Amino acid sequence: MARKRKNNNMTLPTANQIEAEILREKYNRKYKQVLRSTVYSLIVVAAVAVLTATLAFPVLQISGSSMEPTLNDEEIVVLLKTTNMRKGDLCCFSYQNKLLIKRVIGLPGDKINIDGSGNVYINNELINEPYVTDKALGECDITFPCYVTDNHYFVLGDHRSTSIDSRSSVIGLVSEEFIVGKIFFRIWPFDSISLVD
Image (cartoon, rainbow, N blue to C red):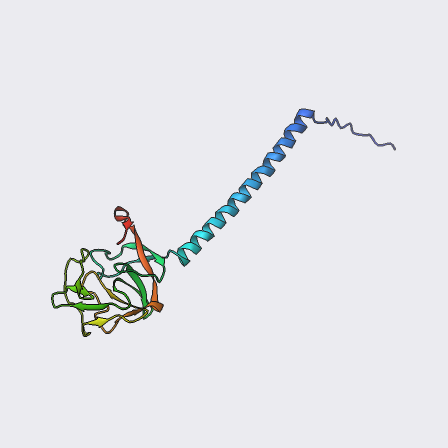
């Protein structure tokens, strides 16, 4: 018995249809390449941003009032990791598994004196401290004059009546090995975004 052959009317695509299909495939390939390279670029940028933020510019939240009025409780600041400190820098250092922020007042070799009214003298010269609104001797159990030894710094909080700092033997002179860096930029609250000095 003979089988009937079905008549399949297959039509071949036209040259225009073939060209359109080739263009569509090229577009899809190009789109996938662009998408892939964009995703890779975003991953690299995110990784660099995280590494930079972690290694060079950590972000910290202020806790407490010892640096008022310069820095207030719950403000968020950016830290520049460095051990190169100058007088007046806001120094972040490690103390008993905490990070403390104080102002560098005395460098290695300096002689520090603080009188009963809270006036600070470096090498027998009264220093100008426009960032201090309440001069006070504060929490002080060390003997003056205090000589800053090599690789150490004398630090004070700006809110002198409440700050525990180098005036107290609890903290004393801060060794360079414990310095994490210096505060240089405030990012929160938004209406207070500014360089910090």
